[in-house]
Length: 533
Image 1: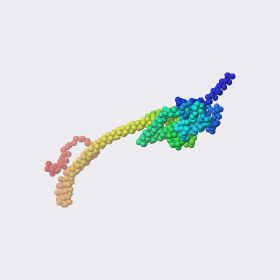
Image 2: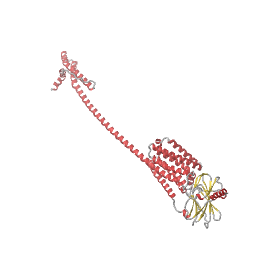
Image 3: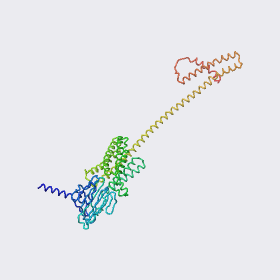
Image 4: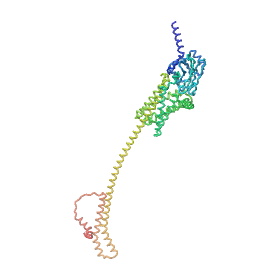
């Protein structure tokens, strides 16, 4: 009997739990998530109508929400959520689906007369009088005349993607309370992105370095995916652009990751610092192309799972390659690793939350914007560090080149001095040689020419038969001494020439000087007498 009572109590408790808790709204109701106060059911076929859903709800098929923000996973199923509330405020009540990228939302709210009003909304629909579609969906609920009875809402949501569903209820006063902390964070994020984009565009226009071009293409890609898609600010654009961004969000992400990979490859100078990662980077680019194709073909749910895998592998690979480059002496990779650490932590937290290992909060959706903003700032610092390193290397190279030029100039000056000295010596030798030449010709002119002229005159007189035989013999006898003198002079000239050619070495010996003087007197006495010395 006791066991039966316990079983009945458990069944009644389960029934009570499956009944949605009534939410009482007044002018002081906090603006918070109501996931634990609702019940829901999964429609795997996506074909249930509101009437069938009501029957299932009465049959107790709905289950209560486990957390303040429902995490409905990545599925093609539709989900029906029931909300019961009493509006005790002085104004209207509103239901807010605080998640921008939901394709289909149908809201059924009961009126006081027992009829139901049907709202249609979603990311591909524009705002209407009863539904305000911005980066969240605000449903203006029907107002009970006395605002004392319990009213019910059935909300149908469907999306081919991950679907966390933060639901909130608010009154007129709560809804216009002004910007929240999340709003300020998103404004800061978009301001940071815009500033970094403009600044690096300016650097690229001045430096023409592709590194800054890749960075400038990476920044708007992040902006499109994080701000326009994940945070829903595409509603500020034209309907066609908004539809393209929300239908193919992962295609934009794939292109963004490709530019990020190209940026990292150039920043780390992988060909020198980590050449083994070049093929891995190429493989990552092919994975991005695969994600782009899957997204373009319309497989949004598959692309969402693909994105988680790609982002996990990419962030880990880029961080490790930065570590290898840093170990190889590329010091700017320090900021680079820190940047990818922040974005890796943000991505990991979001993935674990989507896997239901962590609970969703309102700020879970801000992890990627915050992580991306910090990442981009640190990457900007890393590029500044790299720029300073490049400037220092260029300065060092200029100093080394200047030192080499100075050394070369000094060497050339010494060489010029040495060549000038050798040229001066050569000129001196040429002058001496020229002087010797002049002396040689003087000797030839004075010491050899005169005896030869005398002999030439004797032979000329003989040819003219102006000399007798006796006169001829006398003249020849007298000129015999001149012939010997000529022979001695020629020998002296030859010996002197050989000494000038450094062929003959002087060997000092002892000899009688008088015979040599007598021979020389025979040569020079006629000249002395002629010049009257």
